[in-house]
Amino acid sequence: MHECARCSGSVGDAYRFCPWCAAPQRLKLVEFFLSAHFEEPDKLFRVSRYLHDDLEERHVRFSIWHDARVDAAVSLEDDEAERLGRFLLDTSQPPRSSLRDLLDRVAAIRY
Ligand SMILES: [Zn+2]
Image (tube, rainbow, N blue to C red; front, side):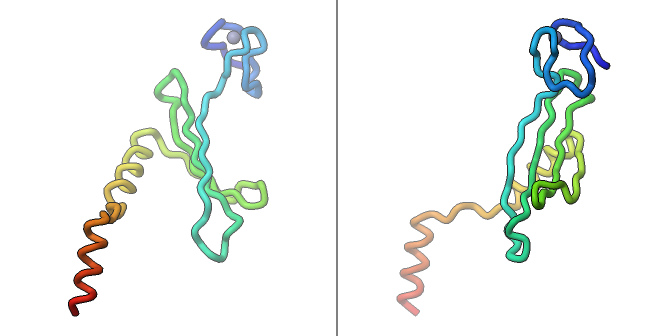
């Protein structure tokens, strides 16, 4: 049991919504990503960001789904998840510009 943050009513931990005021008890954002591996086309990567008023409770959970079941999961605290996000952004390829494509085509014709 825990106390509802909105109405202070007593709420069972299994409830996702407060039975007294209907406030959501667990806020999370979920996004699925498709596997790029050709041998595992039916696996999904799910990222869930758990939002909570108490900053200590916030975290990001990564899970691998196959046939509607979780194969593996790991949770990161927000600061580690943000470090992961920065790593992915910092190491991504910048988009090619149409000028770069044109210069590459001209260079290919000349040689
Ligand atoms: Zn409530």
